Length: 274
Figure (spheres, helix red, strand yellow):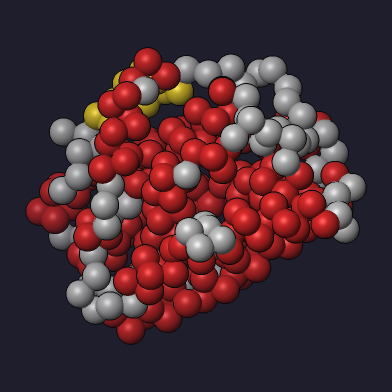
């Protein structure tokens, strides 16, 4: 079991910021903004799915997992609120959140599916966020030039994603989810997640007026496809999920723990799973 702490981030998100908030870099700003636009509806789905999975467990198992699920829900609810504030500034700048609209429709279309499918989708997406989060903690230059408050937001979110990376996976195993469906859903999530983020990034760049500039795509190639870029550098970690013996705890989370330890002044603890 994982001991999860619910934290309140002590940063100002009332003050507006520019569209190119990430160091003036058009691609980095558009890409991370696209990710943020997906978070509120995604985080709500993760909470709902894991809670629904918990309810299907026998009483003894439910009692064993309940504290961790409570911590997971607390962290995700905080992420949803913070990114809702972040996205509000983007909306006032004229950015349209198409990724959220598509996600809401997809959730409606799949609401009837077995709870194990929803927990599998949550576990798959959490794998993505965990490996990207650890990459962020290894590569703070991805936020070079960003306002300190915004860099703190992204690194704090990354640290917590790495911290609770096992929760949905463990619930999926506990409700007798099988390996075949875990991999099938993972491949589906891989395609839809990357396609949705790509579409939203392009929309953001179009609105910014930088879609057809060479400097935009040069920055994108460096961020995503350099030797240790966010996508190219994580292919091996992505592939690990396909193994029948995989568990998220096999991936290193030491950078998450270190960041939270060194930046404790940036947040206050409001709850903790026993």
